[in-house]
Image 1 (cartoon, rainbow, N blue to C red):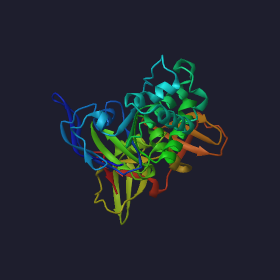
Image 2: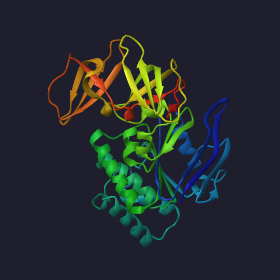
Image 3: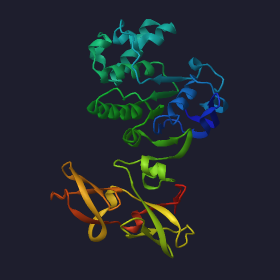
Image 4: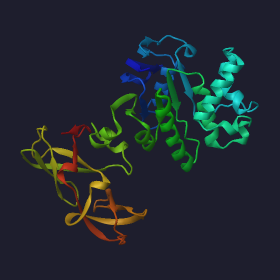
Amino acid sequence: MGVRLHNVSKEFGAFEVIRDVSMDIPPGSFAVFVGPSGCGKSTLLRMIAGLEETTSGTIEIAGRDVTQVEPAERGVAMVFQSYALYPHLNVFDNMAFSLSLARTPKARTREIVHEAARILKLEEQLDKKPSQLSGGQRQRVAIGRAIVRKPEVFLFDEPLSNLDAELRVQMRLELTRLHRQIGATMIYVTHDQVEAMTLADKIFVLKDGIVQQAGAPLELYDNPDNRFVAGFIGSPSMNFLPAEVVSVEGGSVAARTLGEVAHTWRVALTQSRLSPGERISIGIRPEHLKLSDDGMPVRVEVAEELGDVSYLYSRIADGTEIIVERHGSRDRLDGKNVGVTADPANVLAFDEKGQRLR
């Protein structure tokens, strides 16, 4: 079932953590709240769960206003960062705990738990205690405990942050498979934009309690609405260079970088009404920069070689860092001066307030 928020706000005293947030999460989708620490994403998730009161606005789950409804009656199940498993109970009993509280018949409980264990590949672990499991297995038990409740909405609060890098990748794949298999609505909180990009149908990027932009992962990557989203989505992050408009010709703008190296970039813009002399910021993703003899001069400080792809961590003369992504080439460029350029269609522009110019 879907989730809708209408002008939701949350205040702690005089401090407003969530500011007039509205969103629509369709039934069966996988939505991800992403943003830096302190942006309000976990608070927003806890408000949906009913673990935090809503200062103003309304929350709907499956078309029902649950703003004042108790957490246990909202039809949601939450998986936390800490596994929160009962150490004295085995896997079966941990997963069956909520069913036992609901006085579900033992035969039915056994059927539900074994089905969840099959989905999560935990059949061989049901008799083990949590201390006998790996981190990934414990997290799957926590997810299984949520599955057996058959909630309308699954809520995940940074569930993979305690796992090592390899397990995180594995669990991301398992969560994707799980979502496709059970088809439930899932809302997931993370500060890791890679997790957001790989898991989500729809991403909500938050900053200071405000949704900066919402959309499909590649939509946010290709068409960010502002400089914050452009810099937050993508790894390595987008390069930004301060510049001044030199000329405007039809659907193209020429902008010259400020500082010691005055290189002119062309930006493909069709709607903006810019004038020569206006200050803007241009943004270029590392993969869109190409080496060119007549490009903007930069000095390569470190070349990070990762096989087929390499990242050139470079600086222009005024000290601004710029990252270039290369594919295929194996020649070493550490300590060398090179030129970089980009296709105008891949150069983005932002005004002085950080809003995207189009």
